[in-house]
Amino acid sequence: MILTIWKKEVESYFSSPLAYVLIGLFSLISGVIFFNLLVTYSDGILAIPAHLAQEISFVDEVVVKLFANINFLFLFFIPLITMKSFSEEKKQQTLDVYWLGGVSEWKLVLAKNFAALTLILAMILMTCVYPLVIWGVGIRDVSILGASYLSIILNASAYISLGIFCSTLTHNQIIAALLAILGIMGMWMITWGSHLHSNYVLAEIFAYIGISSHFERVLRGLIGTQDIIYYLSFIFLFNFMAIKSLGKRNW
Amino acid sequence: MDKILVVDSVSKEYPGRVAVKNVSFSVKSGSIHGFLGPNGAGKSTTMRMIAGLLPVSSGRIELNGRPIEEQEISKLIGMLPENPPLYLDMTVRDYIKYVARLHQQNDINSRVDKILSDLSLQEVSHRLIGNLSKGYKQRVGLAQALVYDAPFIILDEPTNGLDPQSVVELREFIKKLSLQKTILFSTHILSEVEQLCDEITIIHKGEVKASGPMDEIRRIFKKGLTLSIGVSSGQKLPDLSPFGDVHAQLVSQDSVEDTYQLIFSSEEDVRKELGRYFYEKGVDLLTLGLEAPELEDIFLQMTEKQ
Image 1: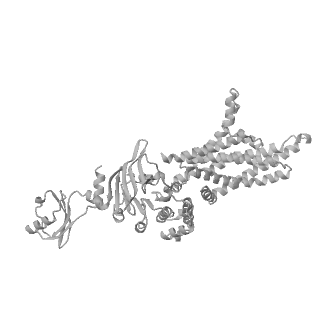
Image 2 (image 1 turned 180 degrees about the vertical axis):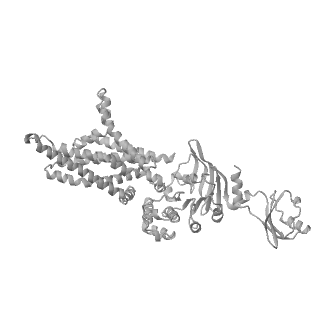
Image 3 (image 1 turned 60 degrees about the vertical axis):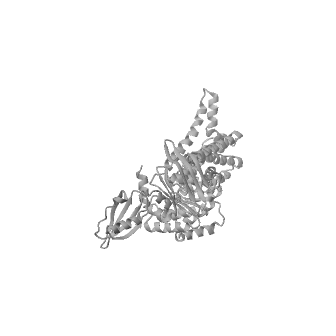
């Protein structure tokens, strides 16, 4: 059942020009960012004495910054992808097809998550030329690249669950997208609370709730159990809320 | 005939509003049951509760003698909601296939072919639903309700907004469909019910006003004996006071005959006495017929009471 809905959703994404525009735009912007980071890095190395140049880490200056920027791009791209997931169905009153078919809310929500993730993976696939370049300059550390990709895939999955939840709240796609953007920004801003010096416990709680600290750890290959638990509970929570929000039809 | 559906004291309450109040009626297996009411009477709410799209606030709905919550109603009920759930960016064939897959059907291709042919949709099967006319869209909506071959079909105002030709075609299709399935069919068009239905339920402001076979409803709501009589053209009606309070109205006139409708206060059949009386008074009685009250009269009578 999930597979049937996933297939239909993916076909629906790729039958509209939006998917191609988003993939093209994403490739262009991330390409420009990668090029700029490379140029800045090589200019920096040439500008300083050779023994100091070794201190500048390619991973820190290019890889980490590239993926952090991709994470920033997701702030806009993912809400644009998830905005119509449910709001359009609500507007066109097409959800009856699923309820009449005995499809449960969770199967539908999961299928929509997987479909949006498929489109994101197609976008990420476009960035695969960068690792080839990175490989070419001699960084042959698969774990760093693996961690980088894992970090943005985890973040994308989390943002997708948030975006899909937002789209269950309204009939209006634009409002759904704006809510998702605000939601993602909110998850970033919570991390600022970790700079609270007056209360250590509260600062730790903010650091855990905010997504940024987990993203950074995974990006640098320092993934721990707490990060896995964090991402799983984030995705579970927003999908659970989406299911509950769809269940409002039961009121 | 057995009862396939029993709706027993069903209510639906929203905060601050009661949409449907203590609705009870039953649908016989193999019948076309008309669900009649003005707009906003609670028809759609009741139908959505029967289809399991809305939970009831109180009461009980049974299908084939068992509560609907205990059954896999996605296999038993096919529904065309008031707004057909159509994906405008899919082709007709893909969409019907998709619905069949959601209902976990086998032989999907042959099922889809059959339903497309039954509803004369083959010629548009590769077109996007969004580009079709309203009549075709309604047929696609009907196809999604029928593709998984459920024995009980709910049609919520299926002819609403269609052109006269499409309405006639759809009614013909519904009649044919009733040979194999039980149909619950809502409308606010009275002539439609008279043409199609064996039984009706009249709902108004969320409450059932009458329910049962069409003839029975007519009988119950008959105010008194209603006769149609014809007398020779130009002749006056005699004094009808021996028959109690009688309301006489000239309905039509031609060169031969003047036709009157007589409504008596009592239900007693006085046709014989009336014939003799007219003969005694020297009035030529050319025709004398018993009139069943029109559904429209019943409907107006009931909804105007409010």
